[in-house]
Length: 611
Image (cartoon, rainbow, N blue to C red; front, top):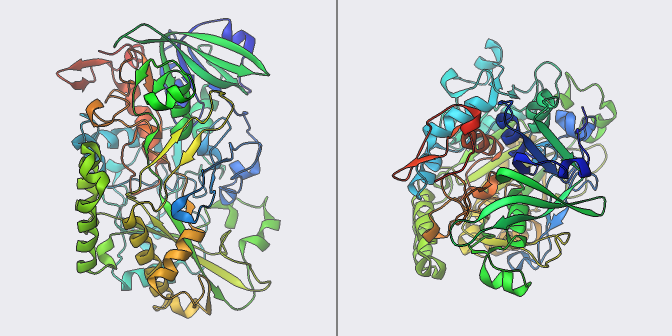
C-alpha cells in the first residue's frame, strides 16, 4: 500500500488538483475529490508513509514520537522574550498523516469548541462558517462506537445521536482503561464548581468530561487521516501520492486580481521538478509551512518579500496572527509502590485491554475564568484590553479582542483547560523509584498574544522563523498564574488531596504571583495547536483567504488547514481541521451576493474555480 508514484513520473503528468501536504486536512481533500473517478489528484508529502510504527499506532504511546527525527519537522521558536528568551520546541508531523499521526498525545480525544466560538467565525466576516455548518462535517468525518450502558451510567454520559457521526472514516470510541484516581479528581472538580458535562460534543464544552478518543474499537489502534482517508482509497487510479518530496513554491501566472496557480515546484532526492495543476493548487501544509510556501511563491507582506529579494505578486499579511495555546504542568507526589506508565512500558505489546489501549489521561475539564477568578480581577483584565495599544491601532484585532473580552467573564465560555494525567510528565521534575506521580496540566486556551511565522531565507529548505510571542500580552500571564494557583487548590481539596503527599513542581516555595509568573516563563510549553497564520477574514481585516478558502487575489489557489482559523478555539483542534477539510469539499464554487452556496453534491463541483 505504499505511495504509488516516483518523483519523475509524478512530474510527467498533470493533475486536476495538486494537494501540497498529505497531513490531517490534505488527505481528506484528496480522498473526497477522488470519489469522482473523472477527477485526478496528486498529493505531495515531505515525509514517509509509515504503517507499522508503535509510537503512531498504539493509543497509549500517542505523543511519544514528538521530535522524532524520522517523522517530525522538529521546528523551534526564535528566542521568546516573554519566556526568558527560551527557544521552545515546536513539533510538527512529517509523515503521511501529518500531525494527526504523531502530534496528538491525547489521540484527538474528540474535542469540539463551543457553538459560540464557531458562530464567531461567521461574525468575523465568514458567511457559512458557523456551528450548524461545522456540526454537519463533524458528523461526516467520524463514526462513534457508543459505550455500554454501564459506562454511560458510571460516567454520567447522555449522548445524543444528532451530534455524532455513524459512517465517517475517523473512528471514535471510549477508553477501555482509566487511571485509578480519575474519579477522585473528577469528584474534586465537582466540589469546586466544575460539574460533569454529559454531552461535550453538543456545542457546550464547559465542564469535566469522560471523552472519546480516535481509536478503532476492533483492532484498538489509532484512527487518523492516513488510516482513515488514505489507506482505504490508496488503490484509486485517479489518486497519486508522492512522499519524500518538499514543495518549494507555487507556480503563479497572470496579473492583478486574476493570478492563476498553474503548478508546484518541488525537490525530491536532490533534484527539482514541476508538476502541473489543471484546476487548483490546494495548500494543506499547516500553520507554519503554508505561510512559508506562500511567501516563497511571492504572496506575503511586502517588507518580508523585499528582504529576501522575492518578486511581489500579491501583498497580503501572510504569517501574521499566529495563535498558540500555552501549557504548564503541576505534578504532585504519592508514596508507595508505583504501577506507572514507565514501569508498564515493558508490557507494551499487550495493549488491547490494558493501559496502552487508551490515552494517558482520564479527565479533561474546560473551565470558565469565573470559576476561580474574582469578578473584580476579571474587570481589571477587561480594562487592560481596552487600554492595549494593539487594540486601539488595529481595527481587525479590535474585532477579535471584542469577542475575547466578552468571553473573559462568560460562564458559558471556557478559558482554561485542566488535564489530569496519572504519571510524572516530561519537564515536571525527576521521578523517584518506587513513587507514584500524578500531574495536573493547565492550559490557557483563548490567548491574547499574537505571533508570526515568516521565511528567514529565500532557500526553501531553511525552516521558517516561528515567533508565537508567548506572554507578550499581560493578560495571558495573569490567566496562567490564576490557573496554576487553582491547580494547587485542587491538590489541597478532598477527595483528591487524600492522594497527595507533596508538591513536586512547582514546589511549595512558589507562593507569590511573581513567583508563579517566573515559573511560567521558565516552564511553559506549547500544546501543538497553531492557527491563524493564513486567516480566513475579510481582506480589509487582515485576511489571507476568503470564506471559500481562496487566497485573495488568486482564482485557484486554496488553503485548507488550521492556518485559516482566525481565532484560537477553546478545544483541541484536530476535529475542527477534519471538519474544515470536509466542508470545503462539499461546496460548489458558486457565490451569490457574497454567500457560499452548495449548489451541487457532485465531486466534480467540489473545488472548482471560484467567483
